[in-house]
Image (cartoon, rainbow, N blue to C red):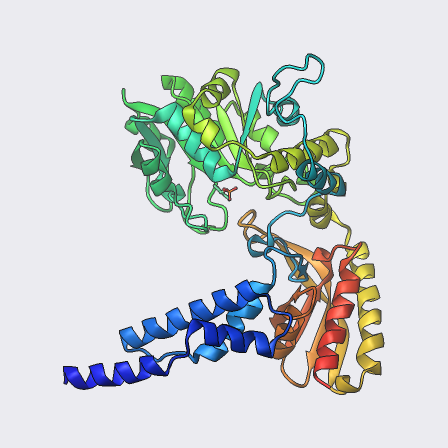
Length: 469
Ligand SMILES: *Cc1c(COP(=O)(O)O)cnc(C)c1O
């Protein structure tokens, strides 16, 4: 038996083209294809075909795979797309959208030298975080603040600096996985702290914490469950209660809030717990959250807390490894300035979360009219129905599960199938990402950027209609 399989495998392997030949074929089929793209695509398609032969599984056609790989490699990534999904903080689409000031600052700082660690007045070395730490503390109404590369790094730094080699108490209901493989028990292990679990999956009581506190306890950790929600017979210990318990035995309390705002959007429908200054005001020693979820800024991990605690974080050797890069720092600086100057709702992410329904409806109407104009003129559009529909958008980003926003969408109902139309829109020069449901493609106007996305939607539909002619 074995020799026969061997013979067959040899024959099939010999059938595979060489990397050079496959790359040449790719470039003959597409004259604009850069040589490096053709070579990489050919190499990866052939490696995949060889691996499939070795494993005895069905080998994909290497020519077809190479062409697909080449198309995907030729497109620089990440590149701009249109978010018509209605999910405001969309993890796969880059979460928050920076304000114009922040985006411009990133471009300027990237293209030249900057006073990143320079004090212009003295000409000597300046602090890297500088005003950002002060602005954060002011907005957060905290004694002090610090910022690192992302919130996962903020949690790691806090555990490392405050609890390494000791015990951290966490409720079993908060031992969650956030997505992107951030798992609370694993991050504790990596930080070299011992996890002490208390309570049960659905119910944890104050006395569960009290009983677990001992001489080795370094801190009480509260974790926002983010994209996970429990209902029914559930009980959690609030942050205020946890602060009380911590105070009884002199154990600090840290909260991983996940998503937080620095301006009060509770009146606009965001839940009580999302306003970071209110968390600090409970008396927690440290609160951390992401810069690019509800804050509407760049990827960053923001930490608000008591002066001594922040000082411990700042002097940890890990702080250097987790520090913010200059582009994120520039974006964060401008984002915080906007919030201090009362322009928070001009930040695209915060604007989308709070925009009145009439404004969203007007944008959807305009898009509907523009799409109908090209949709009905085009010969390929015979069976495309375009309507305006009310819908529900979502906050997303694991920020506030179950929190939906009223919205309006343009609904495209093609005879040829909604999935096919959605794929066509993704394949446009500026790809448009939409929702598919009830046999239609839904373009949700809440997440469309008014300055530029309507043109892109129009261009994408025009491309699809031209290609289907
Ligand atoms: C999102 C989230 C994180 C991870 O934050 P990043 O900024 O993605 O690193 C950690 N903890 C909670 C509770 C979160 O919601």
